[in-house]
Image (cartoon, rainbow, N blue to C red; front, side, top):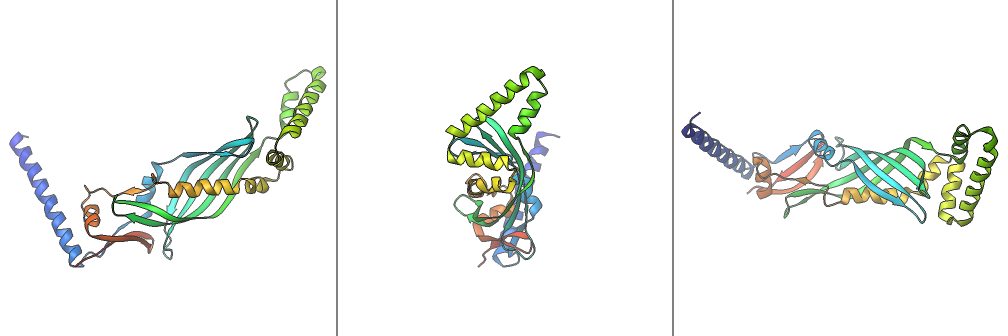
Length: 250
């Protein structure tokens, strides 16, 4: 293709794009196009690019991390907000040793919030509806002792047991009340209680993720419909299973 032909094609594309922009703008102003929409699939493609996200979990002497691995957003036909299902991994350590790991599922809701000055859609009024354990594993002191005994000669197993018991007793003597609570929960295999112990902090982290300024949908003014919305749009809402961009017209 000659340079002259390429130049003409670019000019034609520019004129065609301008004409399309003006046509859509006219249709919006006359009320022929009252809104534009995005589906859940459109939004989930954007969410996937922002995960996984890792948060620190801690109390006075234990710690760990919460990893948000996946998120699935959907918009039920009868809902006026986003519903988000999260798949997370919770790992808890005590004195540098991992004692608990669980796969969690969390259900949340949030409303869209269009910020005209930045041309971004954020989330507001986030709420955690449910969090539960999908699968978990407890690393018990007894399990550690049993595994260790298999690796040492019989003559040394008495010494090994004595060493482990001494370490546990020392830990119980010097650890904080919160940590003792964790240990007792682990020993009794009270999985739901263990989750409840960290529930408030997990909830805080997940709600913080929804409210994070970096979690947003950026309108692209290179897209003609998005550009028209930034100029004439009045707001966004979730209706009928879709995210709807409302246009004003005169």
